[in-house]
Image 1 (cartoon, rainbow, N blue to C red):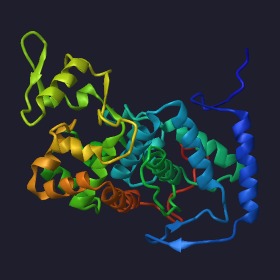
Image 2 (image 1 turned 90 degrees about the horizontal axis):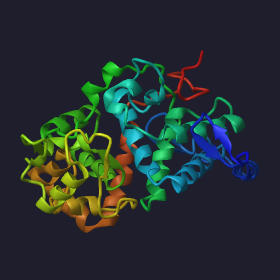
Image 3 (image 1 turned 60 degrees about the vertical axis):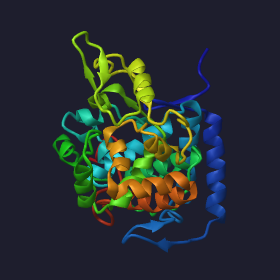
Length: 342
């Protein structure tokens, strides 16, 4: 029997009835909307598309919600996608570009997901607002909405980003955080991006959702002569370490994934910080946030008060999404997120 859903870019499936509902609601929003701007971060504005594409944020949110309903891993993937985009070339959608030597091709990015959701949102936006909403803004809005969908705070983010035309794999490693980084290495990298030590702690809270492949934390174990893993990092809770070794019995278990937060995997909350205090941080770069005196106090504060975490998350998320943005006549508005305009 033929499917009753519409296929977009060979990845995402959206029911035609949903598209019709979106069209009707978009038209309604267009009729009742009036310009409303509040300035933020230079050339970026909250409600940037209020007049040029008034239903833009709704359409992105609906696309993310539909995709997340079908696949609970989507929110974590979208949040990670934003970070990997912003931390390298700035928040300009360069992570989305296809090609042999683009950012996407680097081994650090081959496990990224969420591309199909961004592509589906872009397809819809191009239908109603051609060449208006940037892919860079779609990534930012999608990550923002992913957090809210999983119970986190809904953050007002400025939009108006332009899409970059440069995407080089050679730029990835010098700018990417590795899960085995020390505090000094992470601090140096975040400082170079205009982010503070507090931002490092707060944004690491993104690990309250999502999953990681076994090789992302294999440095915390060592392999004996029989090819079996044993605990090398004594800072890791022994029971938790045992559970990890059952999931990842050898260093070759690279295709297996483990939830970042084993307690509330699909809820955006402050459980991540409670895990750190219990010595159950999945990565070395997680655990060091509690063991280092410079960040220990904030970890404890965020562990005790989820409202504080949510408030700080909103501020840090906006700062992350403003790294290296292109505005005005910089960059372009791509017609398709995976290729530059010709």
